Length: 183
Image (cartoon, rainbow, N blue to C red; front, side, top):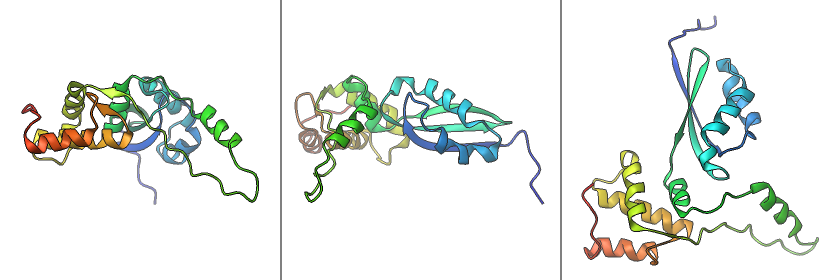
C-alpha cells in the first residue's frame, strides 16, 4: 500500500548543475516527479537563484515541503574562487562548438580534452573570506587548515594568490612566515 502524503514532511534534493540556465529540466524530471513538482517551473526557479553563478558549475539544494520548493545555492570552494577572480561568464555551448571543429580527421588520434584554467590573481584577503565561508564544511581543526584547503583548490584551478603560486603560500603557512588570522 502506498504511503500517505504528509504535508509537513520536508525532503531535500541536492544536485550539481550549470548556473543561470534552465537546461537541466530533463535531469530534474526523474528527481522531482515523485515529489509532485513540475521540472520546468523548478528549472526557472533554479535559473533565478543561480544567476550570480552564470556559466559555472554550482551545487544546489532543493528543500521541498507540501509541494513547494525552495532553492538554496551551496557554495563550493572552486566556485567561490572563480567568482573572486571576476572573470567574464563562460559560454559552454560556444566552447563545445569550437571543440567539435577542432576534431582531427579519421586515422589520427584526437588530442586530449583541454582543461579550462583560470589564470587570474586573487588577494589573500579574498582567500581568507572564502575560508570563512567554507569553515563550517571544512574538516580542518584550525582556521589555517581551512585556508590551506582553499589554497589547494586555488592551485588546482590554476590561479595565483598575491602573485605567488598557492603551494608557496601553503609552505609559508607551514613554516610560520605567513600569518593567518584566528578566524
